Length: 296
Image (cartoon, rainbow, N blue to C red; front, top):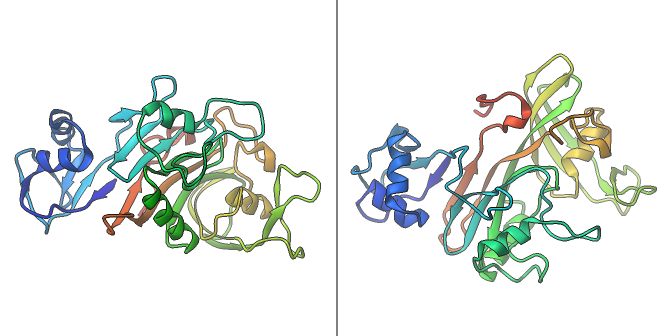
C-alpha cells in the first residue's frame, strides 16, 4: 500500500491520480473501480472530489501498471520527474560487476528510455542503493543528479527506513532481537562477508529482527537494517545460526525458488517535493504463504 501526497486544491480522484502518476485516466479508473484506491481508508470513486485534508492510498497490484522491458518483467510501481520506484525480481543483478556480463537492472532501465542520474558513473546510472542479485523487492531509482544526491544523503544519515521479509532456518526463540555485530570482508573467502568481532577493519552493523510466524523448521521474520553493509542481513542471520533459506553462500537450506529475502517496505523524504513517502509490498508468493500479510 502506497500513500500519495494530498492534492493542493480540490480535484476529481481519477484526474488527480492521472496527474500524480502520469498514467491514462481510463487505466486508473479501472483500478479505482476494483477497489485498489482508498480515500481515508475507504474505496474511492472516480468522480469523487478530494482535497488537501484527504489521505489517498493506492494498492500495489500483482499485475504491474507498466514494466521496464519486454525481455524481463520489472514492475514499476511509481514514477515522477525525479524518481522511479521499482520491484526488482529475484535473480536479476542490479548493475554490471566483475564477473561474466549478464542482463542487469541497469540494462532494463536504459531500455525503458527515461533520463537517469549520472552520479554513479556509466555502469550505475540512477542506482542510489542496491539489492543482492537473489533478493527481490523495492528499490528507488534517481532520474536526475539532484534527486540522486539528496537520496544518497538520506541513506548516509540513516533516515531511510527499510524493512525486509526473510524466511530463516530453525525456530527463533525470542520475538525480538538486536543483532549488533561488526561486518568485514571474510579473511579467507574474499567474495563473502563475515562477522569480525576483533578486527579493527570491520564496520559497525546493526539489524533489528522481529518474528512474524514460526513453523516446524523455519521462521518468518521482519528484518530492519539500520546500517547498510554488504550482505548485512544474510551475514547477521547466519552468525546467530539462522541463515536464510536458499542462501547457499551463508549456509542456508536448499530451495527451488531461491533466497527468501524481500525488501517489502521503504520510507524516505521525496528529494524535491520534500514530503515523506513510503511504499510497501505484500509478502512475495515465493515464500509459499500467498495472500498472507504479516505487517501491522
